[in-house]
Structures are given as structure tokens and as C-alpha cells.
Amino acid sequence: MLNITPSCWSETDTLKTVVLCPPAVLDVPDQQTATDVLWEKPVIQNKAIHNHNELCHALEEAGVEVINYSKYLSIDDFKVNEQLINRVFVRDLACVFGKTVIPGEPGITMRKPEYIHAHNLFEQWMGEQFDLEGNNGMKGMEFGDVLVLNRNAVLVNVGLRTSILSIEKLKGKIFEAGFSEIGVIDLPRRADTLHTDMNLNVAGPDLILSKCFVRFMPVLVLTEKEHRYEMFHTFVKHHGFDIHWTSKVTDTVADINFLNLDPETILISKQRRKSIFRDHPKLKKLNYIEIDVSELEKGGGGIRCMTLPLKRG
Image (cartoon, rainbow, N blue to C red; front, side, top):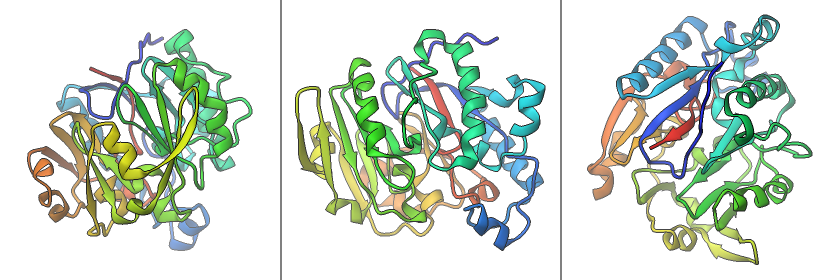
């Protein structure tokens, strides 16, 4: 059994430990099937496995401990888990807020088994830092909708997969974890705006890369004593971030859904539109490690979706 002491206070501190899961053993054979299971395109399993291996290798080369949670499942759970096509998108399963790990709740029922499988393991690995019953009563909480901005603030989208009722239930735990503000944004409810990290992302220690439309979105700011409204750019600038607005995003997943390995390094899809990252001086200074995850991206998620950080330095 693993013994893990989770700790994450930002999106950019040096990544130490991350959870992944390989893609399912099944092909998604044609476009109609992909549409029916809410994926973008058909996926060939052996190509997806090759992409996943490249992702694991890049993380390990960067000095990150990679944990494949499926290796620790019981035989019976594994037989089901290996057929769950969304299991590769581990980001949604849980989130580390400081030293507190909160379990997620799927926004669609076909993902329920993978959450149960992973949560049972997380309780064994993390002990009291993981509250197995912390998602009881939640209506939907997928952590692709959460950005841990810094030691003071988190940003949460309530949209297709995450409910405002879940935020109301969890806010006390987030404040207890040490954060003083929760920014709640309600992004358009479409497939291409499914989660926060399909619309904006932290790029380095003090910059947010965002689609232009987010400039028009208000944020409900929750504190322990009050709530108020601010515009999105006001909220993040209050917490020390500049914003680079871009209208150049042509592939939501490849262009936005990247992973910060440390304050200077980003792991990103080879399919990204490179010109976006030449348009701001802070983006120009970052180091980019490009990998091919194009087959996995057909499921509608990118590198950030496929990684669940447990420890950042």
C-alpha cells in the first residue's frame, strides 16, 4: 500500500507526484459511437496507449513520480475499470486544496464507477487527509472545473458538470484548508466550454491564458464572512495575475489544457497553436515540453485532464 502526504497550493509549484490512469482497453470505433458517449471523435486503443506511454515518460523524465491507480485495484474492480472509457481523465476525481483532498462527484453517471474505485484507494493511501464521505450529497463536482490559484484563492466553474450546490457544501472545507476566497464563475454550457481548463489556464506563476469571452464574465467571490461580485479580470488581478486574452484558440484541448511542471516549464500538446504562446512576453520566457496526445484528445480532454497532481514542491 502506498503512503502519500498530499500537498498542493498552486498550479505552478514544482510537480512531485501525480496520478494517471491508462486509457480503456476498448476502441471507440466510429463517429456515431463517439457522439453517443460524448466524445469528439473515434479512438483507436493501441494509439491511445502509445500517447499515454509518451505522457508518462515525459513526466518521469521531468522527475515526477507517476502513479497508475488502476494497478492497485482489486481483480473484480479492475475488470470493470479497464472498460471505462473516461478513466483516463483523472483530474476530475479529486483535488488537493493545500493539504486537504476533497473527492469529486461525477456530473454523468457513466463515470460513477471510476470515482468509487479511485476514492477507495485514495482513502488507503492518504488516510485522514482524504475524506471519503466528503462528496456525500453533492450534485456534481468535477475538478477540471477548479484552479488552485495560490495559497489564498481558488477559482471554480459551475456549469455542465459542477453544481453550485456542491460549492455551497464544500466551501467550508476549502476555507478550513487555508484558503480565504473562492471565485465562482458560470461559463457557457457547451461541449467546448465543458470545464474551466478548457477556457483558461494558469501559465507560469503569475499569468492566466484565457479565451477572450471570459473578459465579460462576473465572478461570485465567497469568503467566510461575506460574498460579493467582481469581474473575472478584477478577481484574478487582485490575486497577482496578469491575463493574456486570446482569440486564436482553434483547438480548445490542445491550446488551453496544458500542465505546469514547475514555474518555468509547461507540458503541452504537439497539436497546440504555437503562435498563441508567442503573443505575450511572459509566455515567451516559458519552457515547453511537447508530446503527442492527439489520439487521447479525441475523448475531449487534454494533458491537464489526464493528470491529478497530489504533491507540488
